[in-house]
Length: 144
Image (cartoon, rainbow, N blue to C red):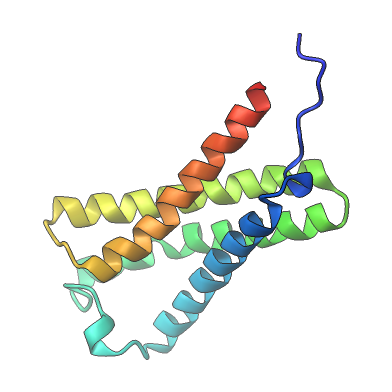
């Protein structure tokens, strides 16, 4: 049995980077949806098929996932800063998992439709890759 307590995220040197990533992603997702709701994205920034009803429905299906990912991430940071670390770190893991899934689902869709627009791929890879790496690092830390 492992008797060495697991190092908490908030005391690790990587905590500021984790917070910065979460804040960037979570606030970015919320801003994206506000801009999408206001329908003010420049046409050059829209993905292929943006105005197709089926593709539009697919895009809007991410709204609950993205909002939940953002709210759990922001709440996780807040709880951790209030010394409620177990709740905070649990919420952060949920947020990272949802963010990873959102990026993976989008990249899978773009791959299946053979749509390789670098800007949308990069944005979704930014959701998926760091989230997956952070989840993996945390799980390895839990095993130590």
